[in-house]
Image 1: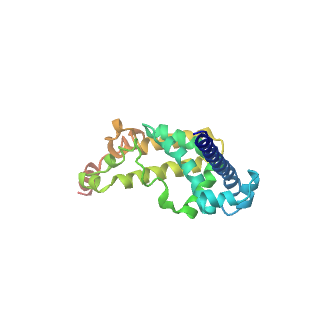
Image 2 (image 1 turned 135 degrees about the horizontal axis):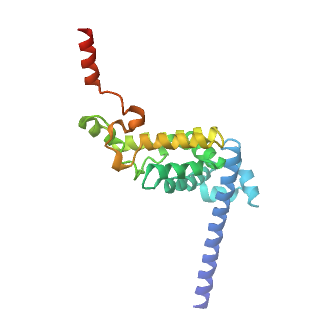
Image 3 (image 1 turned 180 degrees about the horizontal axis):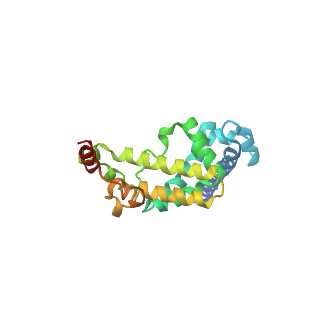
Length: 222
């Protein structure tokens, strides 16, 4: 009985060591891939930063791509949590905060599409605040054709591109404010999603509709 307990304790300790080694490798890889990019990072550099050889990397991850995928999944989970808000503005603010981390941008935006394929990016995730985009379409037929997957990808692309542009412009509160206003108009909350075109009166409230304009043009022509 005593021997069994000792063996069990030893096995648990070994499992803990393996988990600690795996976590240390991922943490080191996050830093290295974030600073140097995928192509500029070697397994030797990652292992050396942990005081290890490259053998544990092959044991836990198989190869460099496998380790990179583990890093990407960790950062992607942060993005998923950031985007799992109730409104597009909350999602925008959370995503923008993540994008101010150069390592996040390097791994998720720069390298992941080339290393792992762009189709991986949140393709299986729904955006809980994105119920309104399809409702902005002009007719019922178009609404039915605009699938949930397509609307989510359009919404996500808008947020990502806006965030990248804000980061490229540096610390500029005016640009951030303009981006937030544009996001709120493009992706309004569900309560305001029924407004025509989703852009509000400041951009098109005084514009006559097409049928009224056509009637005026015909009258003037006569």
